[in-house]
Image (cartoon, rainbow, N blue to C red; front, side, top):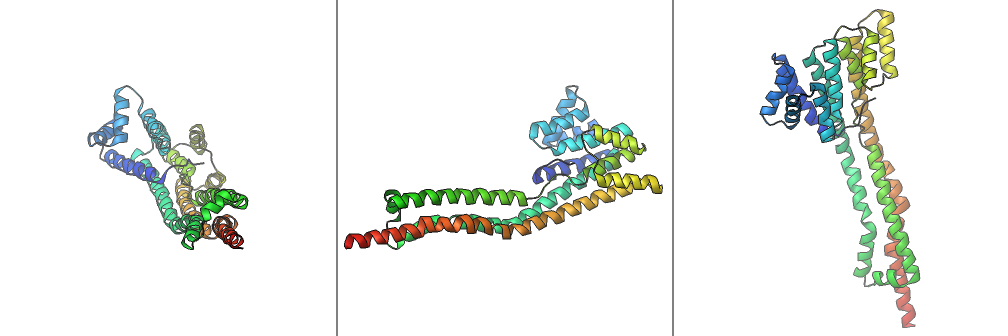
Length: 297
């Protein structure tokens, strides 16, 4: 449903949006609020203000921020802004809700990055183990490099060790990326439907606006809308509570993925790094010792 955004970019976007919400609550027109932010050197605001001066629509100018900076989060902002403007929803409060979602996204990414730091650092350190083995051979007086490049068996060990080192690094990186937080904006669909409903439109109209913007309505949101219709209760608070729960769930799942990484990193260590250590360090030392013994004999 959401889009993947960088955690730091989400934090920057959230700050800009909160500033906009404050200015709008103070009674400034939307374009004027952007111009105030531009006057203090805010880069995204400068882009929006310049685009509006050139005659571009405000929503299109906001979308253009994402195109020029690569921050997909600004598309979500432009969609929320467009829906709020279309239905007459309170724009400042709508922006605050989106900013909270982005701030929570940033918090998820930060928490997972902290949890990942130790196992990922350990994996990188262990990746140097095969090279340490080569230096250990030199320290013991064995020309392991010579063995690896001149002895046919040593050459085979060298090739096999390098392949295993590369596979271990690729495998470790893949595991770390999989454990990293999925920083799509959790609960964004429910939040957008809530923005539409806060403008007083019917549920079907709200669904239509969100779908036309390119955001799917997930099963949880559908269930809440159905509950609202059958029970005759307002859907607005149900949807916002669902969005908060989705962000909490994303934080928990991210921390669990990071915690499981410590165990999964043992796989490339045992399957690739330790065998590479044997091929690049232990095997050349044995071959060197055997060669020395045979020469003496």
